[in-house]
Length: 405
Image 1 (tube, rainbow, N blue to C red):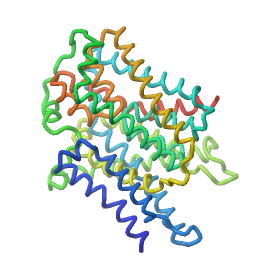
Image 2: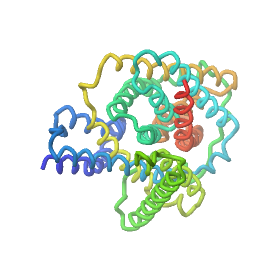
Image 3: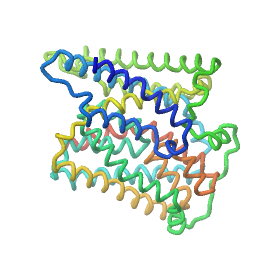
Image 4: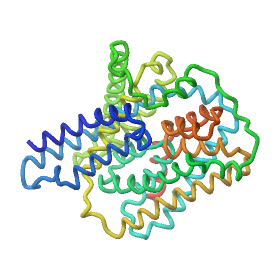
């Protein structure tokens, strides 16, 4: 009975979270993902999802948890990428491109140097943690969760890394929106070369932001959103089919051990690639509310992962992990500023580039509102969208590179 209630919480609480998020502005400042992780951690700390491992209920519940985790992220990725208008990239100025390139260089520099500094400090699974940090700082939680699932990272490690990341990044966002952007303007006092893009999409983003859950059940909206869901499931099926093909060809998995038939890394890279290609179709890109539906699946994953958090597995390595995350954030911020200084990128464009990469596009409109400079809105969102697209590839590449050492 308790397992049924827990599974119901996994599936229903994301709906409650987005409903509350839509109604109360204070929750919009906290963020849906943080709320989802809070629900999961409460479930864990109260012992609600702790079962006697010797019972059949424990085994069944664990298998259902794995099933939800294995399905939710692969379905979420296409849904969140369908609405991304990557053609905006072609309309962005060279300075926007430079701001993105500088951010990627800064993150790669911080992660790789951090790996060599902290690899003997006791951080568990540091190569994969480095990959997840690359993902979350080039697009946000979607890439982070995708890499965690694809690389088979322990749920407790995933929750710890995200917890430290939120504790460290949240003050940075508060600093920026509270007036810290003025400091970046002084450090990077260059002319504003960003032109405003006058489109209906621009106006909609200004008014409603990106996570706009209103009217999702509208009779004209809901059927079209479900088309996006069906397409996402089809991409998942293609990814699974390719994984089975590669397994039979001996490219992935271990036939003797009977493992790796459904390789999550192959599946996630396949659906990410297909989703980016599909987003160039206007009909697919204009399917309403697919991003928001994808976020709901991410929230389901977040609650399940956080509910598997085991405080008894925390040891002194957690301190090193926290320092590792702090190092990555500070070094990436500093290297990005140095790059922008040489490239003569102004403070406002640097700010939205940093937020777009660190926190994903939904955080851009509030920051732009605080700065009072709407001209950098599209630039920040484009940088965040490109981060969504490349973050998973970058994370996988860095994971395999660092594992060589």
